[in-house]
Image 1 (cartoon, helix red, strand yellow):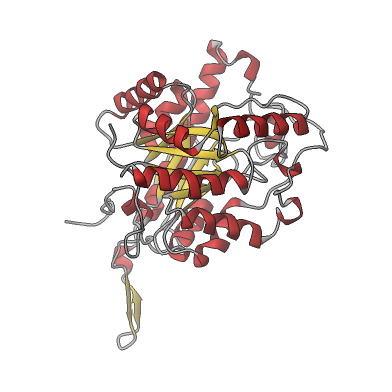
Image 2 (cartoon, helix red, strand yellow; image 1 turned 180 degrees about the vertical axis):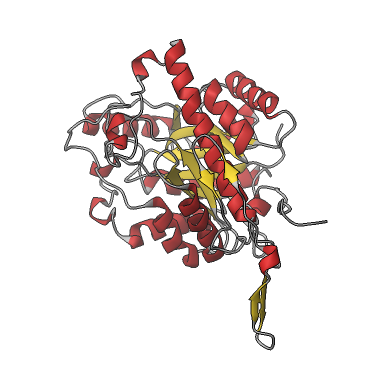
Length: 391
């Protein structure tokens, strides 16, 4: 059984349930205010969680996966995830900040310097969740290239699997460019010697000269190597092709098993694909937590009533007590979990003030942060050496 668990929370709007914004404790008028996001992240930090992730997308929220609906009874619109993370970074001292970026439509040079800058602002606690944007309505926001439309209804057919593999290969190249740009400044490239007038050692800034099918990037970055050297790279995956991206390019993969056996099988498969490369695997769970199991189930039923439909998710939906959730987390025996609060702030405080104390009582979760933590340090990961530094 895992000795110490790692925990993250995925923050999105008023919560992951579409009816959450209509609950009494919700703050729908504050969703686009910095204070709202700061309050959530500070609550997560009070629970000594490893990280928070911020959702993002290039289309409005939709109940139809792969298509844009025109509903007006759902939360619509988001703030930029990287900018939210940058806003809350100076307010926090211990928790990791992991915004989502859409790799399909953004340039890796821009994201490399944005996440490096976030790592400076957060003093070594930045990460990034790389997400693809495959849907036609997202492509139409940019108009920069014509691409074959991905048909979700035929996802299992060979031509769609080939198309999916191409998108994920592009995602892997995207991460490679970002990582090379982070290394394009050696750690001691900055001299700042007023007497000699030398601010940088130009010999320690490197062209990355990446040439691939989708990107041709010269480098170096305009931003020095970030405090962690390589901020944490994460991705969410549901099947074999995304698992290959997780194994090939990320430090941490989020997956969506429905049982302990499925969690073990998925973790083993990603380890097999990684072929010795270290990759952590965490399970995503949507959580509805209350003092009793019946209260949690009643609240989920009320959320469904408010949404007008029974909520379904790519991840398992757990409704119960914090102690019951602690049982499940230990039974599944993964190194970590990313919990998606169904309703904010209610389910977040159930995590920080109910689940965390229960895990601490069981001796499987930290009671405080180490001094001046980095996100990689919280997860037990070394600071990577710079690939361009001579021995």
